[in-house]
Image 1 (cartoon, rainbow, N blue to C red):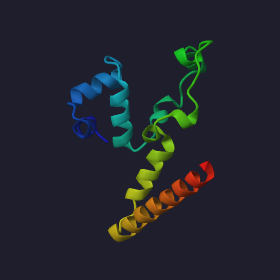
Image 2 (tube, rainbow, N blue to C red):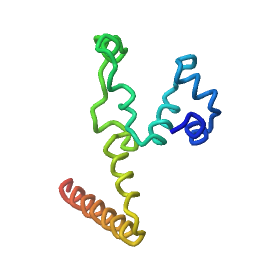
Image 3 (spheres, helix red, strand yellow):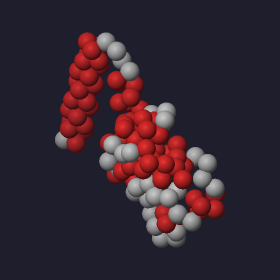
Length: 120
């Protein structure tokens, strides 16, 4: 993908994309998210080859800093959600997508009812 096409896809000029690529400008979290969506990769892709000394110096690695448990994370930012949405939209037949959507809602409703019964 060219810098020009990438820029168009995320609402930037190719010069701005060049500045990110050269490291002249920092890439913010929201822009990184946009880039991951356009390039069809998880955000973690950009950190796969991060040197261990850089990863170790992350503020999250400092003593006393705790990570929120997985269940506390917003489901919209989980990798599983992103993969599920991508797979869903790869289903070309709209009627199949709709049936899958309805089935998912029915399963969720049934799970909610089961959960409510257990709480009684």
